[in-house]
Image (cartoon, rainbow, N blue to C red; front, top):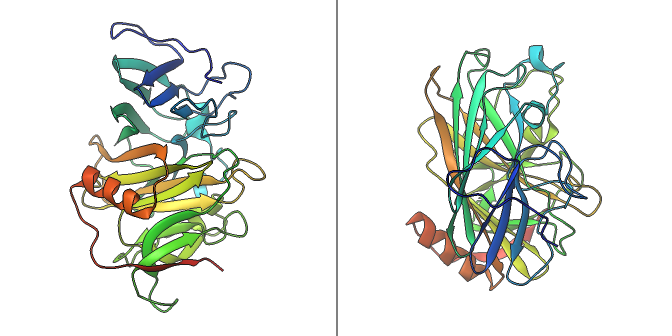
Length: 319
């Protein structure tokens, strides 16, 4: 059931939760404070997401979707720091417009990274998040990249895999473009899928403590979108506005939200950055009735303005 949230006017001051809704979608945007009977402290972003008349939120009620989880640089000097600093540091929420809400974090305890996340309901079934990050000092110089990680904890879907158009990495299998249905066996196993054409994997010191970043997949994606299915509805994640020097990777865990609750995640790498200048990306989260893969493709094409080319063979499940 939809939690009791404060519905703000555009002139309202900061609060902890805000509802944005259309005729078919209801979303609660939350800071990282606890609220209600279920939602736990430390989980920001889309704390609740409902479609149509359903009273079942897509996400694990205690957690959230598009939740800002990690900042990292692969430098062992940071390994004693809490990997969940974005969950802990204060986040300020304010409504910008009726269907647009901002989460702002000045920085975390050890990471001098300012974040501004704007969640906006842009259509009947789509919430877009525009993520802007501004490095205030250089805490990433050793390996020359800024890494940020977002997680979505899915509540007991009947299909725990994510599905994307991709191929096997060079030397790892078939190069034929196809639908890939991927479900890792354990947390951290082949968890992170890079874009096709990339020949880069992030340099990481020994002992790195974020396994979903380190668990490199044998697959790579051809188009920056993936989907999952939960109780007859589809959750599509689509990405764009990734600037030069940026790279977006799909990530996933079979048990990130607890037994039977997978995490459908993503990682952004800024391989080129300047102190005081914004970097970032746009992600669209679509939640609607599942009407097949062709509808997923059409949704991506309409949003991105790009086309999926060529016929696709049957999906291949991860072994």
